[in-house]
Image (cartoon, rainbow, N blue to C red; front, side, top):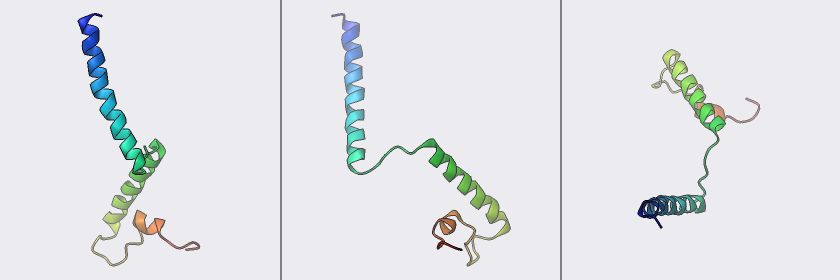
Length: 77
């Protein structure tokens, strides 16, 4: 076999095997890749919070306008 192919095969083995081990370890811990829609929703919520923070105040006691408060609000409110 050509030495260049051996080098390429070695690189593939040294890159893919640790990546596979890392992925399996993460999956055992319950981590999964997030959908891009979920990431976009988080960005929207953060932008909404920052926009609202200009009108409200982070120092105010009422943080009802934050994404965490909207998520944890009891049903019917």
